[in-house]
Length: 391
Image (cartoon, rainbow, N blue to C red; front, top):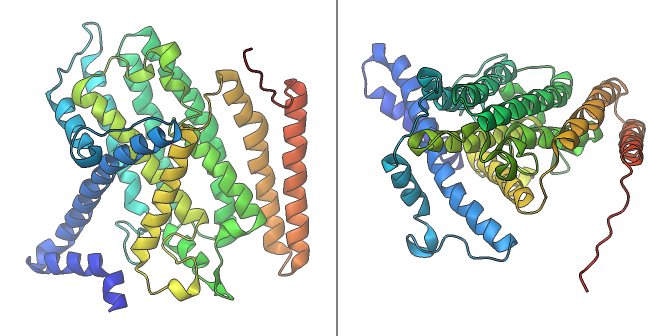
């Protein structure tokens, strides 16, 4: 029974495909898998918008959506209807073709990233040997779509927001790649399925997830910082700074085109959270050996939603950075830490088992963290925060 629950979606797919002639089954299998991804994640996006508004309302001591449907649960439906019926306004001087294609390119490329994510045991659309390389190659296209939107709008604020976004995304994409290279070094594979299998082992009931190693924890922290910047989420949402740029690169978008940008941002957040889950949190593997009977897809999506909760938590907690702080943080702290983490991962791999490698690897990373942080704070004349109240 447990095996059936674990493979319920795989069995359902095989049953549907088996109803068709043999010649059509390979194509039908791909269509069914793609349809499942295209339907599920937008539905998850709709629910997440409610959870985020409710969560931010709770964090900021205000009321979230509470008018449309019971407890405001139908707010995404109202938002969808509004987006479909709202007038699509295109500036007279805009490049019409590029302006139209920009949100489509964003959404399509983000959807393609889901193809290589193992969302459960035997639940991956394209099990490539170089799945991680494919993911990053496809993900690089999002910078193109953002710049297309800003340039084609013929708006100075849009162009400035696009340039900010491209500079930010390229800077942190370097850190994103380097933080993932450590996982490739240890697992010896670019296949996301094999990376999950390498972590699907237990000692004394505890999993061998990479985050439970010094290099894995450091890599995960750097990965989390880089993903927050890549998805333009607070406190790295400078490309959409309303107080400075109206709305950034999508200022001149309205109606369904704006909804596509909104959808693309959340899909990218799901996708990159799923990749982080795969690389550092064991993917679909259970957190304890006695819980392996729980369906593998349940663990994957539970970890993914926990990551989304952290994104929401950060948005409601941290203030927005300045542009110079953002770039300095990328090139003077995150990137050096990622490069050092590659060295630490190599030491971890070749020092063999034992407590000595734990001590040495941890000491190197802690010393670098303290040293880089102290030097940057000294150079920027940053001290302890002091709070003063009006009298």
